[in-house]
Every structure is written in C-alpha cells, then in structure tokens.
Length: 330
Ligand SMILES: NC(=O)c1ccc[n+]([C@@H]2O[C@H](COP(=O)([O-])OP(=O)(O)OC[C@H]3O[C@@H](n4cnc5c(N)ncnc54)[C@H](OP(=O)(O)O)[C@@H]3O)[C@@H](O)[C@H]2O)c1
Image 1: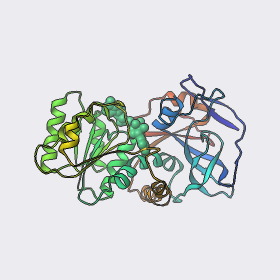
Image 2: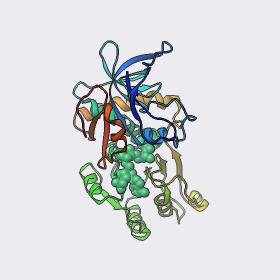
Image 3: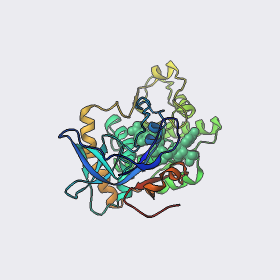
Image 4: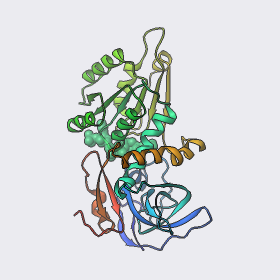
C-alpha cells in the first residue's frame, strides 16, 4: 500500500510503499482510509516533541492518529489508529469508532474530532460547563479555539470571550458566537485592562487555554482575588502554542477559588474516554451535519504529502489528506 512515512530527524513525511498493517487481535480491525486531518498533535508527535512521543523509530512511522475510514462491510466511521492512519490502509481500535451522519463530508468529519476533544473535554467534562457560565477562550483563532467558541455557546455559556493575535480571525470569531474579543498585541497593559473590565462586569467562571506562556500569566494576574469571596473558576490548559512554562504566583492560588487542570491524552479517566465515543463526538458530528458547528477544511492527496505537510494552511482551516483522492491541491 502507499503511505506517508516520517523518519527521525527529517521534518516532513515521504510518500512511499509500506507493508499493509495486520490486526493483531479481536479488538483490532483493518480498514480502508478515506480522510486524515493534519493536526498540531500529529506534527508534534512526528517531530518527537509531544509528551506522548515514542522513542525514535529508525524504520520510520506513519503519522495521523485518527481518521475517517471504511470498515470491511463498507460502513463509513471515524476511528482511532493503532499505528498511523495516513495511508491507504490502517488498523484501528474496534471499540473506538463513531458512526457518521450520512450528510457529513469526509473532510469535515476527519477534521472535527481532535478539535471537538480539545474543546469539549475541557468545557464539559473538566469544567462541567452549565448555562450562565462566562467562558474565556485564550487562543481562540485556531481550529480548536473556533470549535470551542461554538461549543461553549451550544452548552449554554452566557458569554464567550475570545483572545487571539490575528485581527481578521477575531472578527470571524464574533460570527461564530464570541461575544467579546481581546487582541493579543504583545503589549500587556491593554490586554490586562480589557480582561479586568470584563471580569469585573461578568466574572469569568471557565478559562480554556490553548496558548499558556505569557498570556496565561496575564490572565492569572487578572483572576487573582483581592477580597474575601471570589467566584469559582475552572482554568483548563489544553495547548501551549505560546510556551510550555509559566511563572505561577502562590498568591493567585490562595486568593481565588481556582481549579487548575489540564485536558489532554493521559488526563482523562476511562469513563471520560468512553464518553468521547458515545456522547461527545456523536453529538458534535451531528451538529456539524446539521450546519450548527462550522469548521473549514482544505483537502489534498496522499502523494503530495511532503509538500502539503510544510504548507502554511490559512488560519482557522484544517488540512485533510484523502488517500483515495487524485485531486491535487498543488
Ligand atoms: N489536549 C487536547 O485534547 C488538544 C486537542 C486539540 C488541540 N490541542 C492543542 O491546542 C492548541 C491549538 O490547536 P489548534 O488545533 O487550534 O491549532 P491550529 O489550528 O494550528 O491553530 C493554532 C493557533 O494558535 C495561534 N498561535 C500560535 N502561537 C501563538 C502565540 N504565540 N500567541 C497567540 N496565538 C498563537 C495561531 O494564531 P495566528 O493566526 O496568530 O498564528 C493559530 O490561530 C495546540 O497546542 C494543540 O496541540 C490540544
């Protein structure tokens, strides 16, 4: 079969022949792959920088942890690969699949799950979002942030505040449901002042953070309490686009009713993992099929993977590789 294969120390995958994978036990199944999204997670794992990255695999590895595929009986499902899925064939976990609404296209269905997990697990299962919550989404201009804005509203948030450094994307976020936006300009004072004013008028109860780094430090400085009583706040770190470490003042933790958590691979108990496949993804995929959850994609063919991997996709759009497609983006 044809596959994308990435070797240690090489930045981009190659389009090559690879042996067809085999299911190793009754919990695994060989599928035909239709669409695989190229996400921050895949790039980070492939580069060896992600915290789940395996030891260097000299023989190379196939990227793409999940995708849309056809089961042997022809049923189209979303599945999670045992190995990589950016290939014509892959082996997936038999019990980690989601049936797809028939009206949802392959590319959108492939692009949504990682973003939905990155949004919904934090909002719903970590922060227990409820109607009336005021949600701050730090770094909302990417694909996952855009999904988080929409899902926060769908789950009943009274107000969604979105931050980002791209002015055009911030304007688009308003049409997706953000009530207020704050530009990250590199200047601390205006960012802090705007956030303070919002927090004073409508206390923030949930923060979903895709950036971490310095903006997280600024947010904590705003959340720091000064009086006897503070409203409960759940702060969920989901990504670290702006840096992996911050300076955290003990006073912040002592002065506010703060729950600081992360949401990512390794942080979800079995029950939450189960709910991804039985509740979170089926609901979100149906919302997308009904036109109520929006995500933009660009598609490309597997043979072009080396060039596509390096290509800068327009902000807020997800690149999806379709192994059976012959349509070239290039
Ligand atoms: N834990 C999970 O379950 C989970 C799931 C999905 C995603 N994530 C993580 O969440 C993060 C975002 O993912 P994504 O899918 O939204 O990625 P994406 O679509 O590639 O977008 C990345 C966004 O980050 C912004 N950005 C990068 N550096 C920035 C900085 N220094 N300051 C402000 N904005 C910055 C970019 O904005 P510009 O347009 O200004 O460049 C872009 O909008 C990643 O770290 C990803 O790994 C985690």
